[in-house]
Image (cartoon, rainbow, N blue to C red; front, side, top):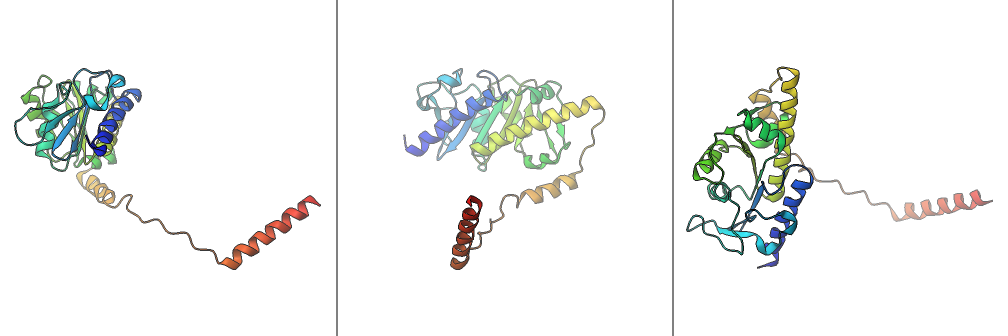
Length: 245
């Protein structure tokens, strides 16, 4: 195992522990995967996160026999949609699946999330779809999830939970948090009445803004002239001497 791979395995475990501590997930119901070269690293099945070690993370080849794996423990029972997402979406480097409360409540009600907040633009479209129901771990669920994720970075799973995907593990977890946040906001706005939904044009405009967000180059501080620094120090010394007399 290379140092780089070990660090990624450790990051997966850290993210698992964080999502439970933050309330984004409960028990071992969630699962996380990350792309590493030609394999997918994924959390093992039914293993408490606090007891998880880097060596326990399962590795599944992204090419070749579907479903083959290596490691001391079996991969998560949800490995199918993780693997199929990674195989079908070269842009995806991390997948986070949780049973977060508000996203799951909406999934139980089979309610997709419309553009109730401009952050919907982070998911690649005007809504977050709700995939149809199929038993966990099945090929049918994987097919439904992939359809709901077409052109999107997140979806709900009917009577189940949610999936968030990103270019890397950090981005996927960030989007998982955003999805649960939007789900909570939408749920609460429904309690007040009829939420106002943003138009496709407004979401597209936000997406344009996101394309340059965080890319600004910080300005370098202006260099002080040598003479000014010495004069300032001399004035400060005079002021301190006066204050003591």
